[in-house]
Image 1 (tube, rainbow, N blue to C red):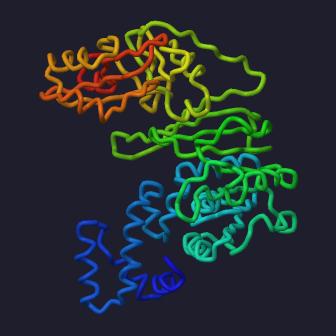
Image 2: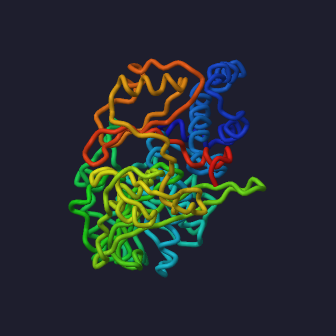
Image 3: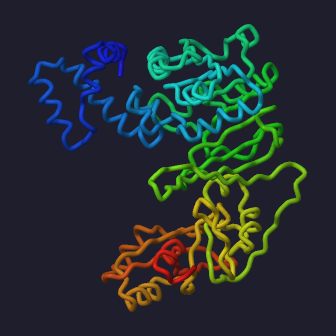
Length: 422
């Protein structure tokens, strides 16, 4: 989108058109576009409105029904924080006693939306003029939020009455490639976390792939997953990290009540300086296998998860936990609230012929392949197995005590649903 397209969308005609479009359907987009042109709608306006309709449909995964009143760019939507996570960000500032937050890299305004929605005063900035304009539109219902086009790092934070700072540096180049070096973020990570000398309450969203090496010792680094997807890591300083520095994992899971109402269940795990290190045992395959949530793995807390599950590792270098009895299931449906569970049906050394014969004897035609600690490519293996049949199975390719093994497993949620195990 460019400034001209935004101007047309924000006209009374453009806003009315956007509101009147049917739910987005990519198979009908060309037909709808042709119909709009046939009615005399400006082609550029029609294209801009259909693009926004497509982006709004995609944005529902992050913003729910709020997406229907927002404007997006593709890049802005990709980097935007999910509303359920942004609400957690806002809660940190509220609990720290902050009343005014500077969102230094506001993008389309996702985090600012959550800040303002919880009653915080927000000063949101972005160096890109069009992006700042979109944020202004998206925050239009919140008098607590002010949006400015400019460099947030140039703000006089004391003069603005800012008590807390938040930043979500850009982690993609103009061509769309991911940036993994924090020094190449825009703005650079060092420049943002240096602000804690001026305002102690600083929060910074970073990519979940950030290395543990070089993380500031005075920050709580928290990895966050939503319904199994690791969506971000964040650095929290000063009063925003009341439990102190360290590494933490936050597992957010959407649950649906019997009446159809959805709510989010949270489970957290952390390791702080001074905590006793957890060194789990490693041993033979038990009756159950557990795969810790990705946020737990990224935070380096697999050993802690093994302790919570009452289990041992299959291999000291592999993030799989095994137990001899089922671990308790948390409110979010995960074992100990942290891991997806499987019942182990069988185990064997890895070998293509052996595995093919085993699966064919059981009429397996639909195979789920999970892997960790092996170079085998699931797509290639599936072709080599050339299976036919009506049965379904799940196999895990991994190492056990340094040896390549195949575990035939069944998801515990499926076992419970069919009544074979409580």
